[in-house]
Image (cartoon, rainbow, N blue to C red):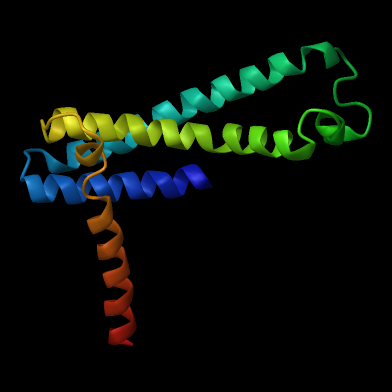
Length: 142
């Protein structure tokens, strides 16, 4: 769910940037950015699952989820403050990594600008302002 929202934002961000920069094949950039985000996100989700399974390798075997269903997995690993942080990391890291990767692709290949933090995330403020403005125009039409 979080990844889908991020994918929509990435597609909108690439579209807005391509429109402002007047690049050729604008829709290829939008589709490519969304596809790159999705691929990197899927790669990180797969690696997260592999890491989590490595943490629990001692619990393996036929009875892995036999006792108490899926709750058995959560008895020791994700309790307490450290467990909350670990859960947040594994939940959000695929989206953050994908977003940073497509920001790099956008900056380096679409805009061909110098690699700085400001350039890397440029256009995000305008993206959210245009989203906010679209809600205002929709409310005014009703």
